Amino acid sequence: MNVFISKNARAFKSVLAALLVLSLAACASAASFTAPQKLADYLYYMEYTDYTPNLTTGENVKMGFACSAVRNGNFYGRNLDLDYADVPEFVIKVAAKEGRYASIGLAAILTLKSGGVDKVSDAELLAMPNLTFDGINENGVAMNCNVAPAPDLDFATKLSTNYGKPRIHAVAVVRYVLDHAKSAAHGVELLKNMDIYGGYGSWALHWMLSDAKETYIIECIDGELIARNDTDNIMTNFYVNYAPKTAYAKHIAQAGQTVAGKVYHNFPILTPHACGVERYAILKEHYAEGAQSAEGMAKLMERVKYTQAYEADTEPFWYTEYNEGDLTIANAPMDFKAVIHYMMDTYKLHDRNIQPNNFWQTWHTSVYDLANKTLRLNIQEDYSKHYDFKLD
Image (tube, rainbow, N blue to C red):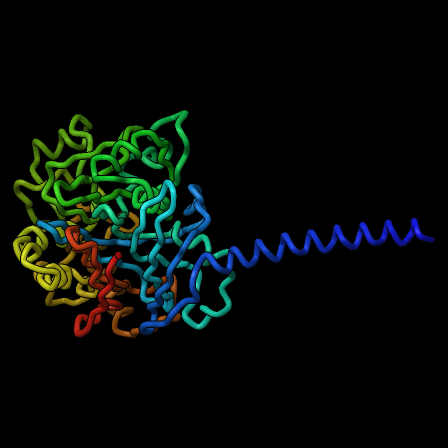
């Protein structure tokens, strides 16, 4: 009998020990981040003392987005453009720890509806920093990702950049750099020692990376990571580093930049599905606004808020936003007519429940001050008010 009791006691102690381990693990997880604090519709704030890094983040993300980014002086502006949906965003501040720098930026769980914030699992919240779309770290290193047309490079851009090196999904690149980069140049070196793969849905990704000294446009071209710091410091949704010796590049050199019936002189080489050409031109024309102040950069980014793509009086009209299916930048404006009218009609409905055939808008406009490590944020195309955050 005593032996029987002893065995049960040992078993009971083992169960208690296991439960204690699980409890401590749960407490550690729960203590790693604060509860989402609602700031506005579709906007929450969270602070992380730690998170669960996942370099494969993005493998199950199937959406696409068309975004704009520009850096001038100390100010770095970025629009995140996605479909008109009830998906909340999170301003996340991640604390420093050994081997990781502190940072602040924007992230989202793309499958989460606004009414379901309280239902999201702790595991999803703990991993959310891996879905950081733009941010700045304590060293004044800022970075964001935009899509680029993978079909124009036969999707090879999504396969590998450095075979044999540690693999990192393109969606996780921003978080990885914010965590580890001492400078923009250091961020480039970090990425050259990784094997980047994947994209965002059927699109590839490219990145703008800045510090107080320089700005890089980073792209995966022909199995190689290409980083240039001699661009216009503007990035929308076409390749800036497109390989100049390709057949398409040679054709462009002979025929000129014909885009939706317009000719763009002194413009970067454009691949067939280039998107955001008009946005790029607007940002370049008004580039000086962005150097004056955070407010000036916000005004510049407001010029390219995405709902203008559906307004007939937008000048210039954004033909290159409509490149789905067989449409490319080589098509004449008349070829876009049916698609444009369909998107305009959808836009007029302002219905968040008709996905996936929904219109897009600018989810947020981030303005990062590289010198002061601050974030000025407008949400859901509301430029009448903004939210300020500082990375202490």
